[in-house]
Length: 303
Image 1 (cartoon, helix red, strand yellow):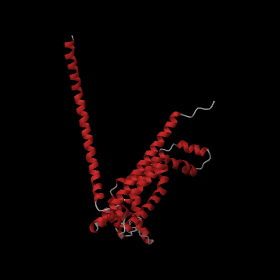
Image 2 (tube, one colour):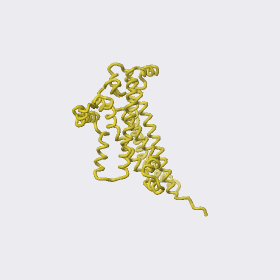
Image 3 (cartoon, rainbow, N blue to C red):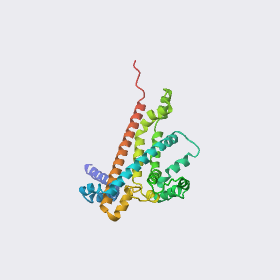
Image 4 (cartoon, rainbow, N blue to C red):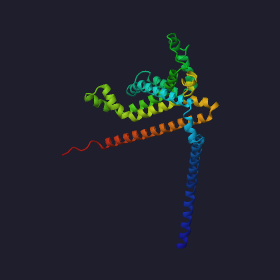
């Protein structure tokens, strides 16, 4: 009996090993595919950035920051992008809040129109702005009669930045306002708070992480704007030559300056992305904590 049982056990274990073999091979193949995909993506994205930072020296980087072209480009970029951000927040916040709280006829069309610059080619955006605000443009021809010229001025830089970057704030702000429970606002109204007081004391603090994230993405997009700016505003040093345009110009005469400006933009972009991710995680953590408190229910009353 023992001798008959041993072959049977051996046969059973052999079948088990053969059954596990395809699973092992399948897991190995999946792992290799995922590993190879990660390696290709990380290498493709990381290699150009490594090459960028490997170029030059820290001393050369510091010395280049004192050149007139870089100083003017950095100053102009800071002034125009901060102005752009202020305008977008001022006018974009009411639009985002209204869209988050109300439904109206044509809402989808308005939302599509607001989002359109995200996918619009920069060259198309530049031409559209030129045909609208240029000296012979749809509105620009009347402004020209009044002696107001917008194209190829610093104002044109700001308008180009607003056009391409505003959707990033409005979209994020709308989502953030939608995530705020209207019950909090109703409770504030019940306690006697005005609409403005409720908005600034209740709604904005709850949606603040999302609003800051949208503002940072808007600022970063405005800082990197190139295509629409060069068509609508030109490339005039000290007037319309922002950091991306200065990089384009420096490529012909001063490669070091172009590379160092590019490094600055990469560092800024990296800082923006990290900050947005941290704010997003904080927002998710707060939402999870709020949901947990609601699931637990109100604390038991003292007997």
